[in-house]
Image 1: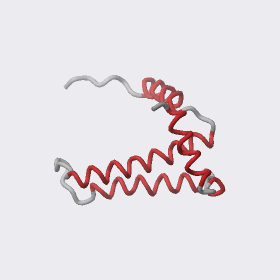
Image 2: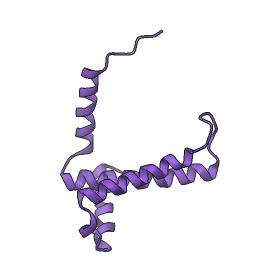
Image 3: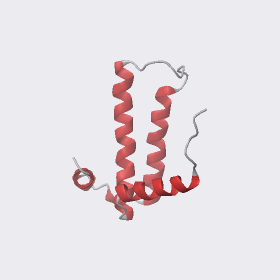
Length: 103
């Protein structure tokens, strides 16, 4: 599924529920942060090398999807193509960060 298909699904879902009035940039940014915090919560108090249980993986998938949905709503609200934004940011990062030198 490409970005535009996903964005259309999300727009339809939002519009069917009358939620567009709540989807201003401030509230979308807050919701994005809250969902990202729920991703982090899954790992709280876990050793860094501990494998996720099947239940944790399912929960993580849901929270990552929630986070991604708010990102897409923000890109859509701003009229920014995420693929273009990522390409531009990678180009900036290439200028900022030297290639890793093997040690």
